[in-house]
Length: 181
Image (cartoon, rainbow, N blue to C red):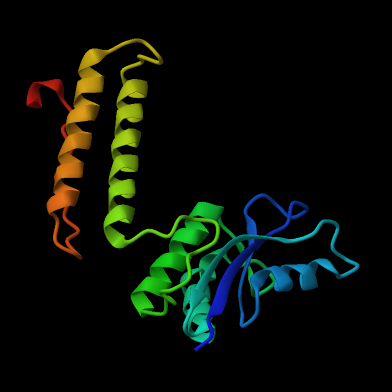
C-alpha cells in the first residue's frame, strides 16, 4: 500500500500563524508547487511539515474537526502556531492509528513515544526552571539552588521515563522548593 500524506504548508505572504493543513496522495512538495503556481499567490508555499498516513481522508477530517475553532474563512486554513498545529496532527494521527510506520516525518525527527515523552518532560522542566528564575527576579544571576532544583527534577523525570510503562502518563510532581531536596 502506498502512503498518503497530511501536510502543513506555510506561505511567507500570509499572516504569521496561518497554515494550510490538508491531504494528498502525491508528494506534498508537488501540492505546494501547484498552489504556488496560481497568479494570485505573492510568494510560494513550502512544506513546513508532512507525515505519511494510511488514510488521508479520515486523518484530514479528524484533524480539521479538532482544529475547527482555529479555522479561517477557507476550510483548510487555520490560525494557530506551527508547533501547536504539528502537535495536533501527530496526536490525531496517533490516536486514530493512521500513521504509515515506514516513512519518517518531514519537519520533525521521527520519535517513538518514549523519546517524545522524554523531550516533553525536559521541556516542562526547562520551563519550570525559567519560570522560577523570572519569578525570583534573578534574570541571569548565578543561583546554585535553582540550578540544583532544575537538575534534580530533570534526573527524576529521566529516571521516570526510563522506568515508565508504555502509555503511563502520570509524571512525578516537580520539586519547586530548595527545602524539598
